[in-house]
Image (cartoon, rainbow, N blue to C red; front, side):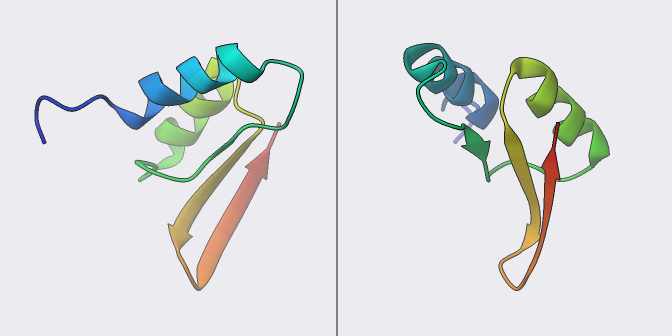
Length: 60
């Protein structure tokens, strides 16, 4: 697991490949507010945080 790619780095790759074609949502590796800020600053459109039954959506 330590050698795997981070979720945000793969998200940026997807964002670059699909820029302007669809909304990009991130739903992994988000644990606190600073993770949401980093995700939105990277260019994602939405960030999900929380458990499956308690999902918070943050849009910019």
